Structures are given as structure tokens and as C-alpha cells.
Image 1 (cartoon, helix red, strand yellow):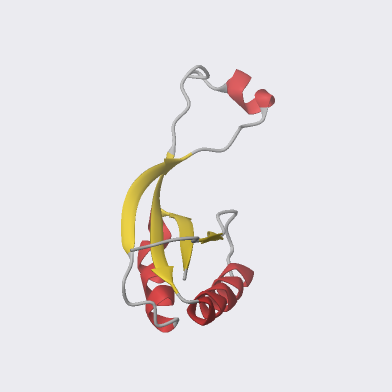
Image 2 (cartoon, helix red, strand yellow):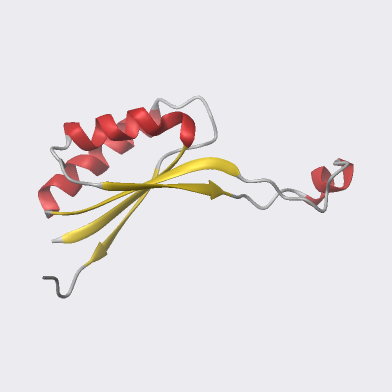
Length: 101
């Protein structure tokens, strides 16, 4: 059993849920988060509110699940990211679990 974590901008929330379902990951949790990128200093200096950094509304969806389901989810995420026309790909990581109850 491993922990898979996927982050995405809020606009892709429904698509991520669909990918989890396609990978047959039926139990998962989610949390709304703010995503940040370090901006180019040139853009910051031209911004009236340069001292203020605003985050992008994002989502984090995670599940404790089996390796084969994670492999399928990563395959589906890869296909999804290849078709993107934005600079906001889905990000995914896997964390091994040593013990669980």
C-alpha cells in the first residue's frame, strides 16, 4: 500500500476525480489549497501590488491504494498532461507506507 498525492489547479478538479475513478481508486480524500509559483522579478516590479503574492486556487487529492492502481493513475495523468494547452499540468507523487492500521 502506498500514498498517492495529486495536485491540480481548481479548474481541473472534475477531471482529476474522473482519472481516479478510471484508475479504480474508489476511496480518496481531497483538500482545497493555494498554489504558488515564484514569479520572474521583472514581472513583480511591474506589478502595482508586487509585495502581495496571490495563490492559485488548487486542489490536492490523495489516497492510500495499491501499486497497480497507482500505475494506471500515472498512465492516465501522463495522457492528460500531454493534451494540455496550459502551463498547469497535474502533479503526482507516491509515498511508500511502512506501517498502517
